[in-house]
Image 1 (spheres, rainbow, N blue to C red):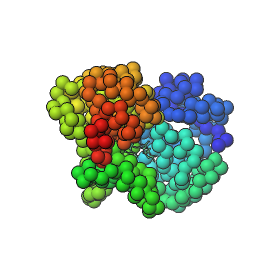
Image 2: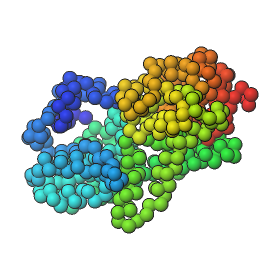
Image 3: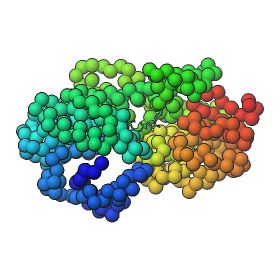
Length: 408
Ligand code: UGA
């Protein structure tokens, strides 16, 4: 967008790799963006460099859940302390924080202005989402309007996106409520899928028909193995806890979370239907990341699924094109294989966990001959079921009638 940016990071190895143009995570387009804008970007370990150069200071640190389910604000508070309270500067909060955090910080921050500017990008399409947001939310309270104007202008120049100007607490709530709503949509369609399985309907058809209603919309209506990642599980929990801490039981959100946890565990019964006991059976997992185009394994459905399968006595093999390198220590006992075909080799069943595009193009005839029993549980309703059935597979999706050569 043409802005000059100083980026301060506390881990020396990350600063070194970023200076060399190497991004420490898998995120399409990010490396190119950083190297393409090298002359406007400075990476530093020193807060002094940043304070010297910048008027708007964006805090983008992690807010993981604590044991109590609240957001852990220690990294945020460390950053706030280091920024100090000089007049003429603004702290712009990008980290997802509980409603009320901004007011608390602002009341302690002296002359420093405070702006809440939550982020709505998705991992895997972070660059695109950042450059083309549906809206940019800018929250500031009385007295800090100049800072909100500056933040709004900084985004308007680059994105042309509509700006939602509001107060700090409402901005914080927009972020939490947006994630909670999307998570609700996913748990809703997953429950519809589970009912579809009982009554013989196909949830992909149901979602298609529902999604054409503008009031509903077609996005985030893909039934599957539940939502994972660093955001939905943590933010739904944090909003539930935020409400609980002030004496309100957020019933709907409690169900959204519970449905999601159960959804991750449903695959074992689909496998048992075909294989009987899973004890001693070999199950191949295709994909481990919580979604495609990322190497992030946080709260991934694969973690629950692998442990459940092992709990039933199954042997688990796995392949993920990007996440496998990090997955080893998270998935003890799971045998990592160098390709999808190698993971399928000798397996009694396969489960598609992450819809990496390359899995769509596998040679299913070869896979069927390599597997002990050609059985596929498509946990994302992603594969071409006709092609699988033709190749001799028994196919089980989520919320769809099972298919095999016999059933057509
Ligand atoms: C999510 C939100 O979509 C972003 O708007 C938000 O900025 C971000 O959290 C955040 O708070 O930082 P992200 O977690 O990166 O983004 O990924 P999503 O694409 O939302 O997917 C989350 C999970 O939901 C994945 O496990 C995905 O497989 C699952 N999902 C998504 C479904 O099961 N069905 C769907 O229809 C859509």
